[in-house]
Image 1 (cartoon, rainbow, N blue to C red):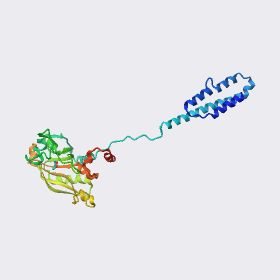
Image 2: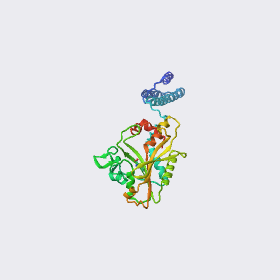
Image 3: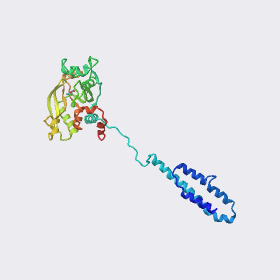
Image 4: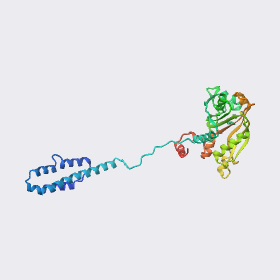
Length: 339
Ligand code: PHE
C-alpha cells in the first residue's frame, strides 16, 4: 500500500499538461469513480484498524494534492485560452467616433448666432424660386445681365423657375408675409452658373440680413456691420465701406475688414491691399419696399449679404473652395475640435 501511495503521488507531482481536456482525463483517472486514488480509498476501508492509522494521513494528503493540482492547472489553462484567442480584457474600450461639423456650417452658425444676439430672427425659403422672388420683386431691370443664362440655372428651360441666385429671395417672402418692423437673417444655399475653380463654385452659401422699420438709416447699417465684424474677427477689427451697385439697394456698398499685410500670404489673400472683401450691403431701394406692399414714405431699411465660403476659406486657411464639397474624410475630420 505504501509503495502504491508513493507511486500515485509521484504521478500527481509529475503531471504537467496544459490542455483542458488532458487535465479533465487526469482528474477522472485519479479522482473519478474508478480512479486510482478512489481505488486506494476503497482498499483502505477494508484494512485492519492498526494499518488504517499508518495510511490515513498520507492518503488524505494525496487526495488533497491531486485536487489542488487539478484546480490550479484548470485555472492556468483558462488564462492561456484568453491569450491565445487574442482577447485582452484589460484593454480600454474603443471610443465612439463622433462626427464633425462642416466648416461651412461652423462659420454659418457663428454668423447666425451673432445676429440673433441683436434681435434678428432666422428665415428660410425654397431653393427653387420663381422670377418674381429672385429678381422682379428685387428691382432687377428686365434686361439685367444677372438674369442671363450666364449666371442663373433655369429649371427645365422654363424662364420663370430657377435655382435661387441669392437668399434675398427669402427676404421678399418675409416682406410679403409680415408687417414692419422686420429684422431677419436668411442663411441658405444659392446657385450660380459659374466656372468652377479654386476660388468660385457653382453653389455656395449666404447669410443675408434685412431690417425694416421707421427711420432706419445708413448709420444703423454701418454700426450693425461693425458690431458683426468685431464679434466675428476680433474686437480691434477695422471695417471700410466702398460704394458699389446692387439693383435692390440704394445706396449700395461693399464692406471690407482690415486683415493686414505682414507676409506673402496676406498679399495674396488681399490682392496687395490688406483689406478683405466680406459682404455686400445697402439701403433697401424704395422700389423693393413698394413691390412688397411696404410704404417707403413711412419705412426705410437696410440689407446685407455675407458669403459664407469666402470667410471659411480665410478662417481655416483652405486653399481651394472645391475641398469644401468633396467630402474627403481626411479633410472633414480636421474640424472635430471646432464647434
Ligand atoms: N444679394 C447680394 C448678392 O447675392 C448680396 C446683397 C444682399 C447685397 C443685400 C446688398 C444687400 O450678392
